[in-house]
Amino acid sequence: MTDENPTPSPVRQGGPVPKDNRSAKDRRGGDRRDAGYFKSESEHRIGDRRKHARRLFQASKQLNFIRFLKEKGIYPYEKAYDRPAGAEVIFQGENIINLASVDYFNFAQNNEIKKAACAAINKYGAGGFSSKYSMGNLEVHMELEEKLAEFMGKESVLIFNSGYLANLAMITSLLPKNATIFLDQKCHLSIHHACLLSRKKYFRYANNDMEHLERLLQVHKDEPEKWIVTLGVFSSNGVLGNLKDIAILARKYKARIFIDDAHGVGVYGSKLRGAADHFNVLDEIDLIMCPFQMAFGNIGAFVVGKRYLLEPAHTETWPYIFTYNIPPVNAVGILKALALLRQGGGQLQKSLWQNVERLRTRLLSLGYEIINPKGHIIPILIGDEVKVCEYAHFLFNRGVWVQPFFYPAVPKGKAIVRVTCTVGHSAKELDQAVEIFTEAYRWLKKN
Image (cartoon, rainbow, N blue to C red; front, top):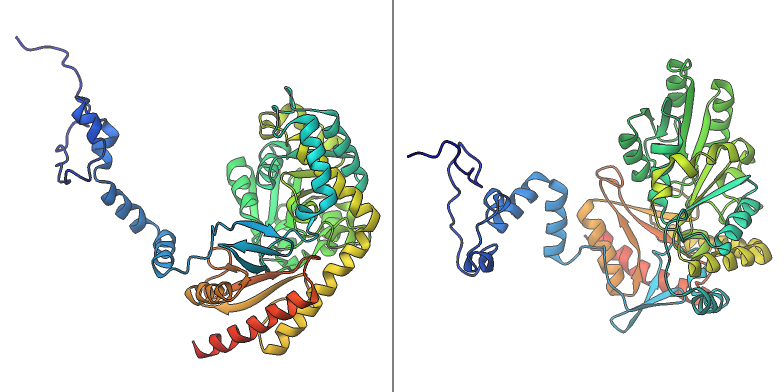
């Protein structure tokens, strides 16, 4: 007698069962089969791991390119070094001059901050506790919020555990649902992702192109909530966002402004408040996001702005509500960095720019093509995506660590290396780096 309701097969109906053509040494879930378990549907569907990997790489040109770089031994990212040592790092026992760091004031290695952090560990413990809404909000966090707002000259502050999360929270949850967003096409990827996830209307304008931005604003002038989103400093080339003209357009079309000023705070402005301070338009910027890595040498990020704009985050912004607060030890370290910036930030800023000018002048004299001859980030144009990795590898093997950028971070055929100085670099270290850059320039011309 036939069962009217047979048990469904774990294999999708209507197609042949995949043939198991694997060797005994390369079988997914072999121990499961030996124990008498059935293969799951996903195991049937995926099949051989190597086939799955081939399909994955065939579907992504970028993954293919990364695999190619790894096979050649010139993949430039994810190097695991032993430890930092001032403006250098120790890599497999060798000292490497670090010209890839964005810890501009070397606060991550500052002895006073490390001493304060050690005392904080003894007082609070080594880690965090919970979200701000549970057991993660301590007096030290409230003090940090107050001091940050005062430092930036704004009313209110929100603290996040990363800049990516801060941008995601602001755009998906804090900007009104009926917001229309106008973002610079070279905004950080986190902003582009946030716009996609937000389901809000958004339009990209060409990098720092105010005419393009105004055309978009004119077309959408009747939208009730208009937000212009840009960077204070573009991270790949150090070019400043055109905040002065953006402020004029925002007034004209009744738009608000949100900027990600990761590389601007501390580096620009007479009060160290970043690109908006530099252009004297700080009061016209509604929201500013800044990670703690660059100017404070720590983890996390903060958003400053008008109180009435940030207050809804405490009830409406889920990435803020349901995320662990930064650990107290980090809050103490950031507070100490703030104190040091208040005491001698002007001199630190001056020292940083002196190092930048010293290195950039020497690199220009060697013949390098530097895309932006004014910013604190020094972008050297190489062009070819493979050559930029070979060039960075050449420098690294001789004792200089730089950061290469290639597509999709920059346009195809416009690959660069990003060179960054810190206040920790001595004149001797920079001169030593220039000697290696000289050798690398000769290699570049031959290849």
